Length: 184
Ligand code: NI
Image (tube, rainbow, N blue to C red; front, top):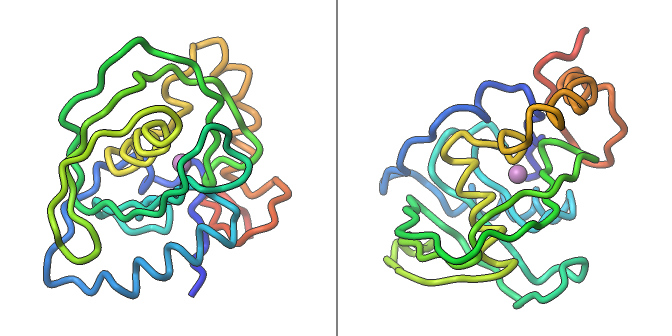
């Protein structure tokens, strides 16, 4: 099932998500999230982006539009970043909840993260480069942070109108979305 992706401006995107409970049926949810992500040609998707405020995100870093990639499909449940290190580097990020907006964001290149996979097996892994970047972006989603939060006050001012239009659904997008400020 393809879920509508929640657009910029919806409070669920600014909320810190809660841990996934082991009794929750996540198998269907994870399948649906992959289907939703691929349908929107995304490389990552976090549960709050489909309106579910739980600490779960998925990624597939093997998309052909990302250079320097390692093919990589993974599920992160109840993740916890243990460290981020190295010299910050700029990378142009986008977000399925904020269509057509791409901006450079500075992040550290090396991370270590603890998480459970879809079988509730615990992992503690290190990632770098674009893979780390995708994980950092999706991790932010379960923390209630959007990449636009990192922009300078001037960039934010310049983008204000576009972000407001996105929240109202005044945008052309080729996947299903839910707009918080759409007028009926
Ligand atoms: Ni995003």
